[in-house]
View 1 (cartoon, rainbow over the protein chains, first blue to last red):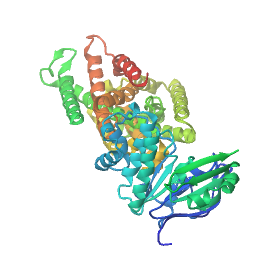
View 2: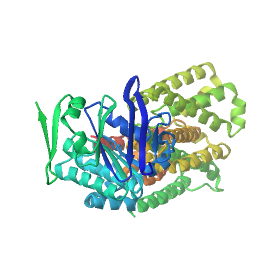
View 3: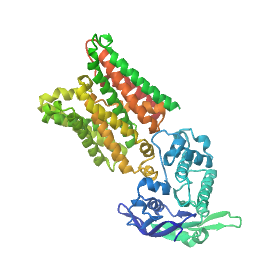
View 4: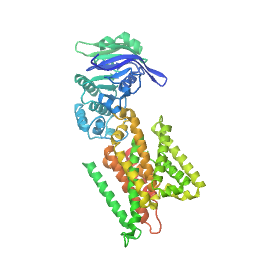
Length: 247
Length: 313
């Protein structure tokens, strides 16, 4: 497909002897937000890392026209950014210095302003709370892909450790990023957040259980298959999402 | 602006320190009646400046590479490898070593490179602590091998013991200073080009890779350059471990953590510290010289403890 930004075609990934991904086939289109969800250990982070180019996959993964695992790091960094589940910083950089690591100071300032973090720019990263540091690393990824069109933003549990306002700010930023022509693939546990994305992919035991529109995928039968618990996700006319677990 | 001012101040301070060191001797101020002290003092001053520059830049590069504020060439076995390389040369071909100005720098560089290769192969899948422990093991191994060789070969014992005490600056002549000083300055300067990679490595290897740094190549380049810098410094001053530990901490306190500024600052601080220590060591007492390593440790240890408490306590 002409609009496919990234794809996996029957991709299998081993972490040591453990099969973390098994025969996963998935394509991500330009301008969409895809949420990856599933229980702990389902392979969500491995899938993101595979798209990021961390694993050799016998050429079954494409990022545009390239195999990310065989592309030089500098070139790859122009095409995709990756917010990992946790990132620490050894030295006491300022917030602006950290955000500029993937780009330059101008882009860093712009990304910080977009996330209402401009007043943090000169502060040492270590003085910020965990959630604030998470926002700073998200800003770093946005600065890295300052021209979103045709780029891939990979986010591993981006809203974990964030308060509701900042979590919503990140979700809104992903929508802005996708409207500008970029693609977002994010691993999330919160199904009401997953329901806000364009499509949802559900993983369990390294296998793709279902993929499609949120309300088509997040059904009790799929959630029962993935989590072993039947979960109802309901969206009302106003777009409000309610998640209930059936005992 | 503040960082630029700090860097210019350090440059000015190192030049002033150089002139002071050139003028001060045990007999007081001056270069002698016919300037005879110039040729005696100039090599050790150039040697101290170059070695300090190399040790400062290599120290901050190693701390960045291993993401550990306690890493320095002394701790990771690189100095031990350099001394062992020089020992092997002095034991096997002493005449060749003393008659060819390039021989010892090459031997030291090969020794430190071998230590670095061993360190990386032992610590590839280890944590940072594991890597540093491997470095400590290599240090012990190289020290033992050096001791065994010098025990059996009396001719090299005095030179090597002087090197291990960090007292080689006093033995420098202009002829034997040029090659290692050039190597020290050039490798230190090349380390400045790794600033962006070192900044990104602070986020961890994975995040650095995702931000655009080829971490394998960057680590290899850093390992080779720090080994060469430490090897060159060893040929100039012997084993002075404290500079590589202290200069990076002082640099970060002065200009911040960004390696674009802290790398050159650490090099300049290393130069000033080593030159000041050497000058103090040769002028404080009229009847004896103190090795620069002792002075560095005496000045540096309290400052380092204070810094460590402030930054890591």
